[in-house]
Image 1 (cartoon, rainbow, N blue to C red):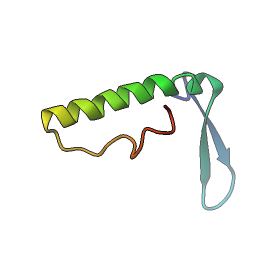
Image 2 (cartoon, rainbow, N blue to C red):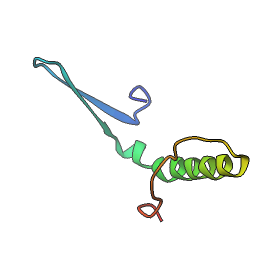
Image 3 (tube, one colour):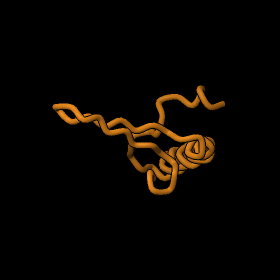
Length: 63
């Protein structure tokens, strides 16, 4: 994802090693699409009786 400009990786030269990832502006443009895909997956799993963890505990923050 970093190679495609969706996330940015920052490495800190310290001990113990520390790395932080952040979403780029291009990556943020995907959030609504990924949210809808995850929501679809949750609904599909529920309909088919597939036991799994839900993507989000609540969908309120995107709607």
